[in-house]
Image 1 (cartoon, rainbow, N blue to C red):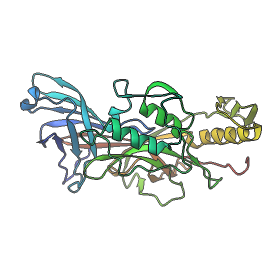
Image 2 (cartoon, rainbow, N blue to C red):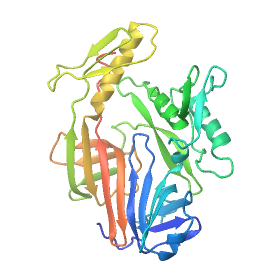
Image 3 (tube, helix red, strand yellow):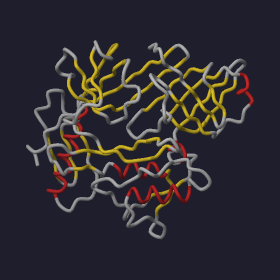
Image 4 (tube, rainbow, N blue to C red):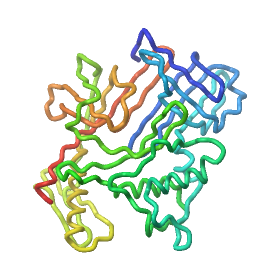
Length: 341
């Protein structure tokens, strides 16, 4: 655990505040997955409290008082014990992304034809989730570029979040063919609620939000390198990238294409996107507790192959009265697209 002269974690459950006798972790897993908090509380008064579905706010207060919570969510499970109570909370997406959440069914008679992805999400949450309380803030929700249409989308009863995340894969900004950028879903707190939003990837050439080295923030690191898919087929077209030194790995591409040329362009794009995430770097750090997912981090290491700019893909924090421990996962995503399109 990292000690700090100013570190006062604070947990607020409903109207009750806890600042002592607690430990746990917060996980920001990325990849459109919901953020979560696990916490064990030793205060005996909580053993008989009605905690299920109560709103939870966690303030890390690392270095200074937080103006907004680092995590906001809702308690989904409670485990009372003799001397403590453990809770598990999930951000507002819990109301739209589980089998117990409200389902959406899109048919020829009942559908969202003509709606963009953002309009669909806004309308559904307003009418079905935020009916008596703001569980999911909508103040920061806006369309992707390019926008994604729900026209002709038909599904059997399915959690709305599954529909959104599947359709979001179509949102790839190729305005700069050298640097196509995808979108992911994040929750951003404004002090009143945690707002769902679509976030476009940043360019690796953007100014880093944080620079880390062994002398400035890195305690330890490890990394894994995977072999990406190097060929794909679909729509009557195919594409092979490179000479396959790590073996041939295929990627099936599904979709409707007007011709083989359109299919080939989509195949090229999807194969090269695979090559942007071959390294997964895990850093144990003393800096970067508040950095947002998708932010650019400069890693200064002797190993040139993993040094340089990377995107934050996930973050986890362990906390207790004794200190805090931070882990960041990064991916470096190089891309050469113009050679093939």
